Image (cartoon, rainbow, N blue to C red; front, side, top):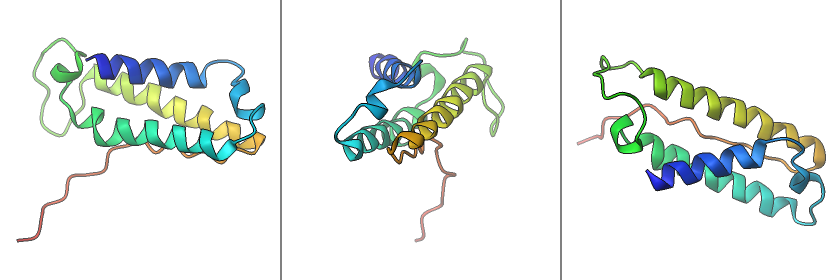
Length: 109
């Protein structure tokens, strides 16, 4: 839960307001790498956890294949953050916030 709260705080702080770090920066590739690493952490670690593990939702059962209202809200926040991260490309920082988890694949035997 602490990692979830930290990642959400970092994501919100990085996309809130003026984002001066994006245009007043001598190392735009480092900024892009940090954003990419944050997105990877969301995609490969946090979003693979259940709502209970993340500490979101009310504990009600959600039908298989559907998202809880809390997870839908989280996905909306991440989607909007991705748009704001991509907006900093105007400052010379080519950023892709690839947070969306992929569909599960069955392993070949």
